[in-house]
Amino acid sequence: MKYRFGVRHIVPAALATSIAALIAACSSRGTPTVPVEAAPTGGATAPESGQPSAAIPSAGFKAVQKSNATNPRAYRQDAAHHLYALNHDRIYQGKLPPMLYAIGVLQVEVDGRGNVRHLNWMRAPRHAPEVVAEIERTVRAAAPFPAPARMGKVVYTDTWLWHKSGRFQLDTLTEGQL
Image (spheres, rainbow, N blue to C red):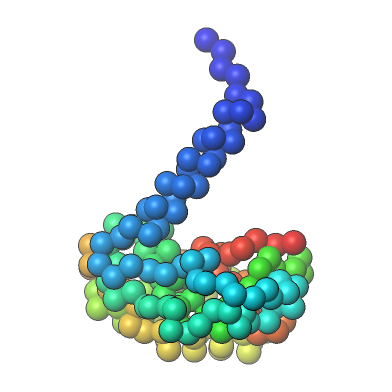
């Protein structure tokens, strides 16, 4: 039996997958996360500039208190939303430029109460020690993270995409690159 998949089959499947992912991200038990994309946008920002959006009010974000994730990959979403909520003015808005100042891959161990127990650099941007220090400071300052209620504790990994302006995106929630 030969299967033929054309654009007319892929587009609806991709759309359905995207909608399912959006619904899953918005329908967690406990305190809901507020993705950056859901924030009201009253004005335009230049994505290339990396300037914060004045249209995203700080009161529009709420940090998650509890995560019902059942694996580290799912928890990473809650942790990323938590970091974005606490650092909304430092998030690079729009697509990142092709050349970034630094990229780092950080593994974070979070205990059952959301406290950061250990940070482990899988790939540190050694050419930018100030970025390493700032990312570590940002992660520690964001504690307590959402408590991993279903896992007890969790070790998750995320990639930090750092722009020369000092603004960043996490790979988990990135808007992509130009």
